[in-house]
Length: 243
Image (cartoon, rainbow, N blue to C red):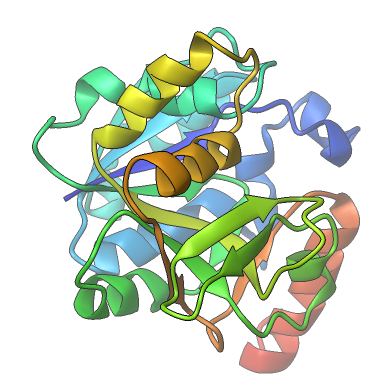
């Protein structure tokens, strides 16, 4: 299986720190955010990784290299439209993914516990899926979150930051296949500046149901601001005893 990590954005809410350092290289407990994702992928046996870069992307490429030092193989795609929403970054990776295989999609500014991906791959027997948290309890999980409404069978029936009724939170981890690229190409004809959320909503309502796979209880965080880093560092130090 391949994994795609979206790491192209400008990180505007992370300014001024992201002015000279891309947010995926911001450090949690002295390690860049994106290294935790790579470690989780390797632990789950996923060693083919495509990273979509844009804003200060050369720094990500210089830091990670070809992935050999992490025990994985990393390829890079450059999204020259990185100032737009993140569906343009996903589209940039299309040609590097085998067309007949499912792939993981992860957000490069999210922290994922190293056990999450292994748990998902070992227990999810269906795709497309979006990993959701039904019991979020920390500020970096809840504030400005993308909300998800699941039906009684666990499938996504609505998704968005402002939907009025919801019962789960989007964690930024997906298993998709090339159907998502057909959706992107179609929606580009009717809407500009697409988000991945836009595409997931269209996919689940019009093409194929998207499963909301529950990962409640595992640690994950959406990192938007420098304050999120401070909170996560403090929390993880309490859990691990690390400095």
